[in-house]
Length: 278
Ligand code: C2E
Ligand code: CA
Ligand code: CA
Ligand code: CA
Image (cartoon, rainbow, N blue to C red; front, side):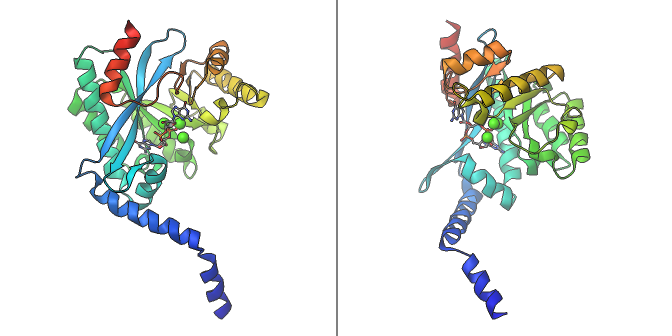
């Protein structure tokens, strides 16, 4: 028993302790973030490669804390998932994104749609389809103006339940995208049964396209597979003209990345779209 105790003690390293202190600190700060208005959505354009048009934008959450500064969603989303806070935050994201889209459409941008990231925790809530429909109805927007970005992880534990939820969302007219495609563990036998409108090719395959022939082979294969399955493709993390040229040549539908624009505040989106149309 003594040995066990000592091993257990040693297993909890100072580094791990610092990590869990930080997670606790973030969890406490998150509890007040919504009521104190510390969240904001930024929006990153997705460019239709064939025409250069922007038809959709991805909403990305930003959190500015008065003392802790700006905290990356890559850090605080996992904390919010562990604590369950992601449900409230995710609902705020959906509501805020759709209210913004409604405002843009009213301001003369009728063709825009928005993509919203959905955490696996949210996806597994039985009420999600109902909630999405309710928020869409509140904003009086057509369901196909909303894309929900899911990750392959949603289908790992219970593929059948995941397919049923995707079917429900699809039946309500919402579009589904598979985010970070190629990095998860979903099997291709499931993919063909998913009601997926779009595959988002993970930026890890795009980054080294110029000098990695394996990445070129993978990206090209994903695009051809998606075409055969009747799904669209969006390349993430496009930063250079050379990457874009390869994607265009391979028939990728959309590109998103710093080559076009970083995520922008709502006000800057309007300026960006206006500038592009000239
Ligand atoms: P993601 O959904 O894969 O989002 C793409 C990330 O890549 C964003 O990071 C974006 O700013 C970044 N990015 C865009 N273009 C480029 C580029 O050309 N090069 C590089 N290196 N990066 C680029 P961000 O905004 O920090 O978000 C990180 C992750 O946090 C997201 O990854 C997503 O998984 C999660 N996230 C963000 N907002 C939300 C949200 O509202 N709900 C949920 N559940 N997750 C969110
Ligand atoms: Ca995403
Ligand atoms: Ca992604
Ligand atoms: Ca990602």
